[in-house]
Length: 155
Length: 208
Image 1: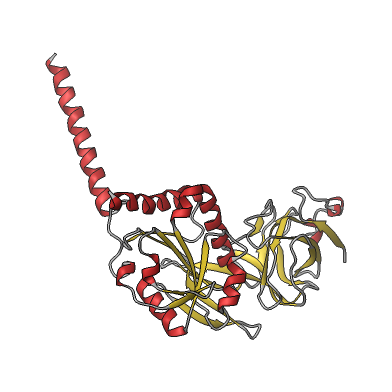
Image 2 (image 1 turned 90 degrees about the horizontal axis):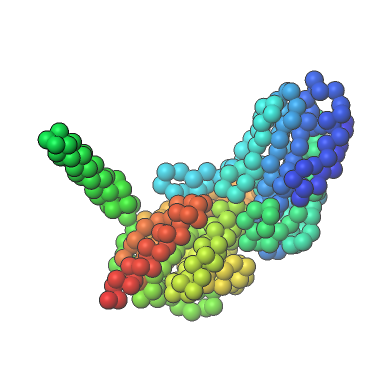
Protein backbone atom coordinates (compact mmCIF):
# COMPACT_ATOMS: atom_id res chain seq x y z
CA UNK A 1 0.00 0.00 0.00
CA UNK A 2 1.36 3.34 -0.95
CA UNK A 3 1.21 6.18 1.42
CA UNK A 4 1.93 9.76 0.59
CA UNK A 5 2.51 12.72 2.77
CA UNK A 6 0.86 15.76 1.28
CA UNK A 7 1.34 19.31 2.40
CA UNK A 8 -2.07 20.86 2.63
CA UNK A 9 -1.04 24.50 2.46
CA UNK A 10 0.07 24.32 -1.16
CA UNK A 11 -2.56 24.74 -3.84
CA UNK A 12 -0.71 22.36 -6.13
CA UNK A 13 0.52 19.23 -4.46
CA UNK A 14 2.98 16.55 -5.36
CA UNK A 15 1.25 13.40 -6.44
CA UNK A 16 3.67 10.65 -7.25
CA UNK A 17 0.65 8.52 -8.00
CA UNK A 18 0.23 10.30 -11.34
CA UNK A 19 3.08 8.12 -12.56
CA UNK A 20 1.42 4.83 -11.65
CA UNK A 21 -0.92 2.70 -13.73
CA UNK A 22 -3.86 5.01 -14.53
CA UNK A 23 -6.54 2.31 -14.76
CA UNK A 24 -6.35 1.53 -11.05
CA UNK A 25 -8.18 3.91 -8.79
CA UNK A 26 -6.87 4.38 -5.29
CA UNK A 27 -5.26 6.87 -3.03
CA UNK A 28 -2.56 7.58 -5.61
CA UNK A 29 -5.29 9.35 -7.55
CA UNK A 30 -6.48 11.37 -4.59
CA UNK A 31 -5.25 14.92 -4.20
CA UNK A 32 -5.96 16.86 -1.04
CA UNK A 33 -5.77 20.64 -1.20
CA UNK A 34 -6.24 23.67 1.04
CA UNK A 35 -6.38 21.75 4.31
CA UNK A 36 -6.85 23.87 7.43
CA UNK A 37 -8.29 23.71 10.91
CA UNK A 38 -9.05 26.01 13.82
CA UNK A 39 -7.18 26.12 17.10
CA UNK A 40 -9.05 24.60 20.06
CA UNK A 41 -9.65 25.93 23.54
CA UNK A 42 -8.18 23.14 25.65
CA UNK A 43 -9.04 19.52 24.92
CA UNK A 44 -12.68 19.17 25.96
CA UNK A 45 -14.18 20.69 22.85
CA UNK A 46 -14.15 18.89 19.51
CA UNK A 47 -12.08 20.37 16.69
CA UNK A 48 -12.87 20.57 12.98
CA UNK A 49 -10.67 20.36 9.89
CA UNK A 50 -11.47 21.35 6.33
CA UNK A 51 -10.01 20.52 2.90
CA UNK A 52 -10.82 19.70 -0.70
CA UNK A 53 -10.45 16.04 -1.72
CA UNK A 54 -10.10 15.51 -5.46
CA UNK A 55 -10.22 12.22 -7.34
CA UNK A 56 -7.92 12.63 -10.33
CA UNK A 57 -8.25 8.98 -11.37
CA UNK A 58 -10.59 7.09 -13.72
CA UNK A 59 -12.38 5.07 -11.04
CA UNK A 60 -14.57 6.18 -8.12
CA UNK A 61 -12.96 6.27 -4.69
CA UNK A 62 -14.79 6.01 -1.37
CA UNK A 63 -13.62 7.70 1.80
CA UNK A 64 -14.57 5.46 4.72
CA UNK A 65 -12.82 6.97 7.70
CA UNK A 66 -10.08 9.03 9.32
CA UNK A 67 -7.26 8.50 11.77
CA UNK A 68 -5.02 11.01 13.49
CA UNK A 69 -2.75 10.93 16.53
CA UNK A 70 -4.47 14.17 17.60
CA UNK A 71 -7.92 12.76 18.41
CA UNK A 72 -9.40 9.48 19.57
CA UNK A 73 -12.55 9.81 17.47
CA UNK A 74 -11.99 11.58 14.17
CA UNK A 75 -14.99 11.28 11.86
CA UNK A 76 -16.47 13.02 8.84
CA UNK A 77 -19.55 14.95 9.92
CA UNK A 78 -22.02 17.05 8.06
CA UNK A 79 -23.77 20.21 9.20
CA UNK A 80 -27.23 20.79 7.77
CA UNK A 81 -29.40 23.86 8.18
CA UNK A 82 -33.15 23.40 7.64
CA UNK A 83 -35.74 25.85 6.30
CA UNK A 84 -36.36 27.17 9.83
CA UNK A 85 -32.69 28.07 10.16
CA UNK A 86 -31.92 25.30 12.64
CA UNK A 87 -28.48 23.72 12.23
CA UNK A 88 -27.71 20.14 13.17
CA UNK A 89 -24.68 17.93 12.76
CA UNK A 90 -24.39 14.19 12.16
CA UNK A 91 -21.90 11.59 10.89
CA UNK A 92 -21.73 11.72 7.10
CA UNK A 93 -21.01 8.00 6.56
CA UNK A 94 -19.02 6.90 3.53
CA UNK A 95 -18.25 9.50 0.90
CA UNK A 96 -17.93 8.35 -2.72
CA UNK A 97 -15.97 10.63 -5.03
CA UNK A 98 -16.55 10.05 -8.75
CA UNK A 99 -13.63 10.21 -11.21
CA UNK A 100 -12.63 13.81 -11.86
CA UNK A 101 -14.86 15.06 -9.02
CA UNK A 102 -13.90 16.64 -5.75
CA UNK A 103 -15.56 16.88 -2.37
CA UNK A 104 -15.25 20.04 -0.30
CA UNK A 105 -14.99 19.84 3.46
CA UNK A 106 -15.84 23.42 4.35
CA UNK A 107 -17.56 25.43 7.11
CA UNK A 108 -21.28 24.75 7.28
CA UNK A 109 -21.09 21.48 5.34
CA UNK A 110 -18.87 18.44 5.54
CA UNK A 111 -15.98 18.60 7.99
CA UNK A 112 -13.49 16.32 9.68
CA UNK A 113 -14.80 16.37 13.23
CA UNK A 114 -12.02 15.69 15.72
CA UNK A 115 -13.67 14.29 18.84
CA UNK A 116 -11.87 13.49 22.07
CA UNK A 117 -8.69 15.44 21.43
CA UNK A 118 -5.56 13.98 22.98
CA UNK A 119 -3.84 17.35 22.99
CA UNK A 120 -4.93 20.95 22.40
CA UNK A 121 -4.86 22.28 18.84
CA UNK A 122 -2.40 25.15 18.95
CA UNK A 123 -2.34 27.92 16.35
CA UNK A 124 0.76 27.65 14.15
CA UNK A 125 1.14 23.87 14.58
CA UNK A 126 0.22 21.22 12.04
CA UNK A 127 -1.05 17.70 12.62
CA UNK A 128 -1.21 14.60 10.40
CA UNK A 129 -4.66 13.43 9.34
CA UNK A 130 -4.98 10.16 7.43
CA UNK A 131 -7.90 9.57 5.07
CA UNK A 132 -8.88 5.89 4.77
CA UNK A 133 -10.37 4.55 1.55
CA UNK A 134 -12.46 1.42 0.94
CA UNK A 135 -9.74 -0.27 -1.12
CA UNK A 136 -7.42 -0.18 1.88
CA UNK A 137 -5.49 2.81 0.60
CA UNK A 138 -4.76 5.84 2.69
CA UNK A 139 -3.59 9.42 2.19
CA UNK A 140 -2.01 11.46 4.95
CA UNK A 141 -2.36 15.24 4.96
CA UNK A 142 -0.53 17.67 7.22
CA UNK A 143 -3.20 20.09 8.36
CA UNK A 144 -2.15 23.58 9.49
CA UNK A 145 -3.86 24.87 12.63
CA UNK A 146 -5.01 28.46 12.17
CA UNK A 147 -6.62 30.84 14.70
CA UNK A 148 -10.00 30.10 16.28
CA UNK A 149 -11.57 32.89 14.22
CA UNK A 150 -10.06 31.70 10.90
CA UNK A 151 -12.49 31.71 7.99
CA UNK A 152 -10.57 29.73 5.41
CA UNK A 153 -7.22 28.23 4.43
CA UNK A 154 -5.73 31.61 3.55
CA UNK A 155 -6.41 33.20 6.94
CA UNK B 1 -47.59 62.00 -35.37
CA UNK B 2 -50.65 60.23 -34.07
CA UNK B 3 -48.92 56.90 -34.23
CA UNK B 4 -46.11 58.29 -32.12
CA UNK B 5 -48.60 59.46 -29.50
CA UNK B 6 -50.15 55.98 -29.31
CA UNK B 7 -46.72 54.47 -28.93
CA UNK B 8 -46.04 56.95 -26.17
CA UNK B 9 -49.24 56.02 -24.30
CA UNK B 10 -48.41 52.36 -24.80
CA UNK B 11 -44.94 52.76 -23.28
CA UNK B 12 -46.35 54.73 -20.35
CA UNK B 13 -48.98 52.01 -19.80
CA UNK B 14 -46.38 49.24 -19.81
CA UNK B 15 -44.30 51.29 -17.38
CA UNK B 16 -47.26 51.78 -15.04
CA UNK B 17 -48.10 48.06 -15.05
CA UNK B 18 -44.47 47.19 -14.36
CA UNK B 19 -44.39 49.66 -11.47
CA UNK B 20 -47.60 48.21 -10.00
CA UNK B 21 -46.22 44.69 -10.28
CA UNK B 22 -43.01 45.79 -8.60
CA UNK B 23 -44.84 47.54 -5.75
CA UNK B 24 -47.03 44.47 -5.26
CA UNK B 25 -44.02 42.17 -5.17
CA UNK B 26 -42.19 44.49 -2.77
CA UNK B 27 -45.09 44.52 -0.33
CA UNK B 28 -45.97 40.85 -0.50
CA UNK B 29 -42.87 38.79 -1.28
CA UNK B 30 -40.10 41.37 -1.47
CA UNK B 31 -38.03 43.12 1.18
CA UNK B 32 -41.07 45.19 2.23
CA UNK B 33 -43.16 42.10 2.94
CA UNK B 34 -44.11 40.87 6.40
CA UNK B 35 -42.17 38.06 8.07
CA UNK B 36 -44.12 34.78 8.27
CA UNK B 37 -46.59 34.95 11.15
CA UNK B 38 -45.64 32.90 14.18
CA UNK B 39 -41.94 32.87 13.36
CA UNK B 40 -41.38 36.56 13.86
CA UNK B 41 -39.40 37.27 17.03
CA UNK B 42 -40.94 39.49 19.68
CA UNK B 43 -39.68 43.04 20.17
CA UNK B 44 -36.95 43.20 22.79
CA UNK B 45 -39.25 45.43 24.84
CA UNK B 46 -41.75 42.55 25.08
CA UNK B 47 -39.18 39.98 26.19
CA UNK B 48 -38.41 39.12 29.79
CA UNK B 49 -35.31 37.18 30.84
CA UNK B 50 -32.34 37.48 33.21
CA UNK B 51 -28.87 36.40 32.10
CA UNK B 52 -25.24 37.09 32.99
CA UNK B 53 -22.71 38.48 30.51
CA UNK B 54 -19.15 37.17 30.17
CA UNK B 55 -17.93 39.82 32.59
CA UNK B 56 -20.39 38.75 35.27
CA UNK B 57 -22.88 41.63 34.82
CA UNK B 58 -26.61 40.99 35.17
CA UNK B 59 -28.22 41.57 31.78
CA UNK B 60 -31.66 41.33 30.19
CA UNK B 61 -33.53 42.56 27.11
CA UNK B 62 -33.56 46.10 28.53
CA UNK B 63 -29.74 46.11 28.35
CA UNK B 64 -30.08 46.14 24.58
CA UNK B 65 -32.61 48.97 24.18
CA UNK B 66 -31.19 52.26 22.89
CA UNK B 67 -28.72 50.73 20.45
CA UNK B 68 -29.25 48.49 17.41
CA UNK B 69 -28.66 44.86 18.32
CA UNK B 70 -27.36 41.71 16.65
CA UNK B 71 -27.98 38.38 18.44
CA UNK B 72 -26.74 34.88 17.66
CA UNK B 73 -27.40 31.57 19.48
CA UNK B 74 -24.78 28.85 19.80
CA UNK B 75 -22.51 27.03 22.21
CA UNK B 76 -18.78 26.98 22.74
CA UNK B 77 -18.45 23.21 22.19
CA UNK B 78 -19.69 23.71 18.64
CA UNK B 79 -16.85 22.97 16.21
CA UNK B 80 -18.29 24.19 12.93
CA UNK B 81 -21.33 26.49 12.82
CA UNK B 82 -20.55 28.70 15.82
CA UNK B 83 -16.93 29.63 15.10
CA UNK B 84 -17.94 30.13 11.46
CA UNK B 85 -20.79 32.48 12.38
CA UNK B 86 -18.73 34.34 14.97
CA UNK B 87 -15.95 34.87 12.43
CA UNK B 88 -18.54 35.94 9.85
CA UNK B 89 -19.91 38.45 12.39
CA UNK B 90 -16.37 39.63 13.18
CA UNK B 91 -15.83 40.22 9.44
CA UNK B 92 -19.11 42.17 9.12
CA UNK B 93 -18.14 44.32 12.11
CA UNK B 94 -14.73 44.98 10.57
CA UNK B 95 -16.52 46.07 7.37
CA UNK B 96 -18.83 48.41 9.27
CA UNK B 97 -15.86 49.98 11.07
CA UNK B 98 -16.85 52.76 13.46
CA UNK B 99 -20.55 52.13 12.87
CA UNK B 100 -20.12 48.75 14.56
CA UNK B 101 -19.24 50.53 17.81
CA UNK B 102 -22.85 51.74 17.98
CA UNK B 103 -24.25 48.21 18.07
CA UNK B 104 -24.84 45.54 20.68
CA UNK B 105 -23.51 42.21 19.46
CA UNK B 106 -24.50 39.29 21.67
CA UNK B 107 -23.72 35.57 21.49
CA UNK B 108 -26.21 33.69 23.71
CA UNK B 109 -25.41 30.09 24.64
CA UNK B 110 -27.99 27.33 24.34
CA UNK B 111 -25.73 25.06 26.42
CA UNK B 112 -25.53 26.73 29.86
CA UNK B 113 -24.48 23.45 31.48
CA UNK B 114 -21.03 23.67 29.88
CA UNK B 115 -20.96 27.35 28.97
CA UNK B 116 -20.28 29.05 32.28
CA UNK B 117 -19.48 32.76 32.52
CA UNK B 118 -15.75 31.85 32.45
CA UNK B 119 -16.15 29.62 29.38
CA UNK B 120 -18.03 32.40 27.58
CA UNK B 121 -15.39 34.98 28.54
CA UNK B 122 -12.57 32.87 27.13
CA UNK B 123 -14.49 32.01 23.96
CA UNK B 124 -15.68 35.49 22.94
CA UNK B 125 -12.16 36.78 23.61
CA UNK B 126 -11.01 35.11 20.40
CA UNK B 127 -13.40 37.08 18.18
CA UNK B 128 -14.24 40.77 17.54
CA UNK B 129 -13.96 42.72 20.80
CA UNK B 130 -17.50 44.07 20.33
CA UNK B 131 -19.04 40.59 20.80
CA UNK B 132 -20.55 39.90 24.25
CA UNK B 133 -21.27 36.39 25.55
CA UNK B 134 -24.43 35.76 27.63
CA UNK B 135 -25.31 32.69 29.67
CA UNK B 136 -27.68 31.87 32.50
CA UNK B 137 -29.89 29.21 34.06
CA UNK B 138 -31.55 26.76 31.71
CA UNK B 139 -35.07 28.09 32.34
CA UNK B 140 -33.94 31.62 31.48
CA UNK B 141 -32.30 30.42 28.25
CA UNK B 142 -35.62 28.77 27.40
CA UNK B 143 -37.40 32.13 27.88
CA UNK B 144 -34.88 33.87 25.63
CA UNK B 145 -35.33 31.27 22.87
CA UNK B 146 -39.11 31.59 23.22
CA UNK B 147 -38.96 35.37 22.74
CA UNK B 148 -36.71 35.04 19.70
CA UNK B 149 -38.79 32.10 18.32
CA UNK B 150 -35.47 30.24 18.25
CA UNK B 151 -35.15 26.53 18.92
CA UNK B 152 -32.46 24.34 20.43
CA UNK B 153 -32.22 20.69 21.33
CA UNK B 154 -29.67 18.57 23.13
CA UNK B 155 -28.54 15.58 21.04
CA UNK B 156 -26.33 12.73 22.36
CA UNK B 157 -23.11 12.23 20.37
CA UNK B 158 -21.33 8.91 19.83
CA UNK B 159 -18.34 10.20 21.74
CA UNK B 160 -20.47 10.01 24.90
CA UNK B 161 -20.79 13.81 25.01
CA UNK B 162 -23.66 15.70 23.53
CA UNK B 163 -24.08 18.32 20.88
CA UNK B 164 -26.77 20.96 20.38
CA UNK B 165 -28.99 21.57 17.38
CA UNK B 166 -29.92 25.23 17.35
CA UNK B 167 -31.21 28.14 15.30
CA UNK B 168 -28.16 29.47 13.48
CA UNK B 169 -29.62 32.70 12.06
CA UNK B 170 -28.42 36.09 13.25
CA UNK B 171 -31.22 38.36 14.59
CA UNK B 172 -31.22 42.11 14.02
CA UNK B 173 -33.17 44.62 16.14
CA UNK B 174 -33.49 48.40 15.87
CA UNK B 175 -32.46 50.66 18.75
CA UNK B 176 -36.14 50.83 19.74
CA UNK B 177 -36.08 47.05 20.30
CA UNK B 178 -38.20 46.36 17.23
CA UNK B 179 -37.23 43.23 15.27
CA UNK B 180 -35.83 44.24 11.86
CA UNK B 181 -34.65 41.11 10.03
CA UNK B 182 -32.53 37.97 10.15
CA UNK B 183 -29.29 37.03 8.48
CA UNK B 184 -29.29 33.37 7.45
CA UNK B 185 -26.49 31.05 8.43
CA UNK B 186 -23.34 31.76 6.39
CA UNK B 187 -25.14 34.39 4.28
CA UNK B 188 -22.62 36.22 2.07
CA UNK B 189 -21.22 39.50 3.30
CA UNK B 190 -22.79 41.40 0.35
CA UNK B 191 -26.24 40.60 1.78
CA UNK B 192 -25.43 40.60 5.47
CA UNK B 193 -23.78 44.00 5.76
CA UNK B 194 -26.66 45.94 4.08
CA UNK B 195 -29.11 44.20 6.45
CA UNK B 196 -27.08 45.39 9.43
CA UNK B 197 -27.04 48.91 7.96
CA UNK B 198 -30.86 48.73 7.79
CA UNK B 199 -30.98 48.08 11.53
CA UNK B 200 -28.51 50.92 12.10
CA UNK B 201 -30.45 53.36 9.91
CA UNK B 202 -33.68 52.65 11.69
CA UNK B 203 -32.04 54.04 14.78
CA UNK B 204 -31.34 57.33 12.98
CA UNK B 205 -34.97 57.63 11.87
CA UNK B 206 -36.13 57.01 15.39
CA UNK B 207 -33.81 59.65 16.74
CA UNK B 208 -35.05 62.45 14.46
